[in-house]
Image (cartoon, rainbow over all chains, first blue to last red; front, top):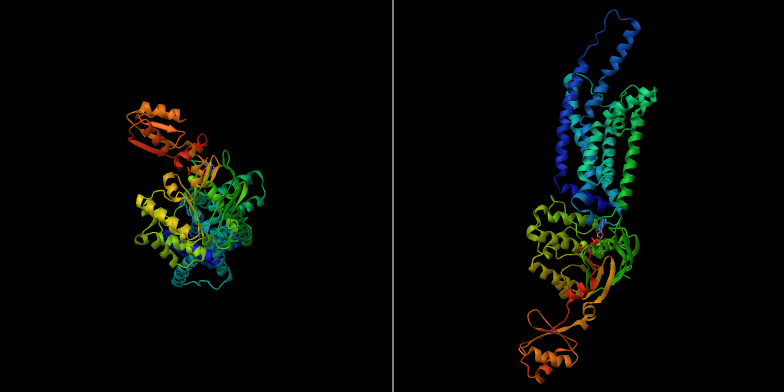
Length: 284
Length: 303
Ligand SMILES: Nc1ncnc2c1ncn2[C@@H]1O[C@H](COP(=O)(O)OP(=O)(O)OP(=O)(O)O)[C@@H](O)[C@H]1O
Ligand SMILES: [Mg+2]
């Protein structure tokens, strides 16, 4: 297995793919970091302006809501997980390439000749994908940490890095990266065409959450129950966001761990389906 | 039992509309070059891919040295293969392509350089695959097949894209491997090349076995059809004499006599008897190409 993982890592290292993706994640991390810092700056310095004629109980409610939104912790999580949205997408695409490259460049023959046990190859690819995900996570997280610590010091707020809420989010972020890599590999096996798989996953990833919001909102019109909206967690990109967000993503959203379980479930499913497909498929 | 004999038995592959390979059985002996012949679409590539566990058979088995390919503990050290529609990543160098395979097979990196030397690709080792010519790609394929110094070689049209010098090199290379006791199974369309190269042939058509055996035997089995070309100014005289001797004589388009039923010495003797002057006396034995075309006639349609 070590042999196969070495081989898979070599495959990525000996092409342009890895540095193109690394560059793209650094750039997008920088971009989202700038946006998140600007947002944090705005929220953290905003003062609550309540109309003086507001009844006491309503004023109290508004104050609480404001406090939750403007918590330093919330902003801290945001800043320290910057780049997650695009990072996960890139890692998923890398996972796709791990499989589809074999067909696109007709190297599947050489790969399967060296290792006739195809489930081992998929396992090696999954592990390699996860390893690269970890590297990408480390890259974005280091950038986030350095920038974030400086940002909070300049702003004069505690950075809350020691808080469990924040460290948990940073660690869960690693898990999100890993699972999206597994997704990528599974999807690559499912849709063998390089372009097909890449476009499908990108579209699902980028518009998936939005589309889900619309679909479930419409469903909610017919079944006027809150659990209908809670069900949005079945959409992978939504589950990913729910898992990371220490505050509720939307009023009916389930707790973080539900998002985590859904995402892990999908990861396992994608890995299994990918393995089964690859074992059956003829290479000709 | 690792003698490197390839045994194909009852191998069948049914695609949606075609039975690409149909209950095919044959054996390939070590220490010999075996030519695997058949018209386009006969099922050669499909058969070889089934032997190598790349395509799942509908029925039947194929073993190499008594084991299925998937059960070989170290497949690349036992079997080397070159197949159609097999390539390298376009952005990867030739040497790195081989190193990726080395890593997967647990072979040392230096094997990559050794096989590059072996096929004469050392100057292009650091060039990206997209810059390789057809012949260079084929040589890289051979290099990859030789990485594990295998006992068995399976090659699907390895001469594709090679120049005459390359083809001659390949012939010597494969003959040499066989003389070292290795098993060499090679498919090809180049029948004259095969006649020079192969010891045995397996001929298939429409997915079925047509004939198997040593080249000389397969060609010999058809030599009842050997005929002799005779050119003489006294054609009428000689024709009469030969017909009396029991031969069948036809006249070719160029005026030469095409004689079947008697051998060249008898024709010479007959000419001497009637004092006919001979300008040409050639026995035309059917070659592999003739035999192949005859054997696969009518079955050679693309399915
Ligand atoms: N993946 C596939 N799906 C459907 N049919 C296939 C597939 N692969 C091969 N065939 C069919 O199986 C038959 C045998 O094909 P194969 O490639 O084995 O022939 P071949 O002897 O290698 O021919 P050639 O000399 O042209 O290389 C052909 O009719 C082909 O169309
Ligand atoms: Mg073929």
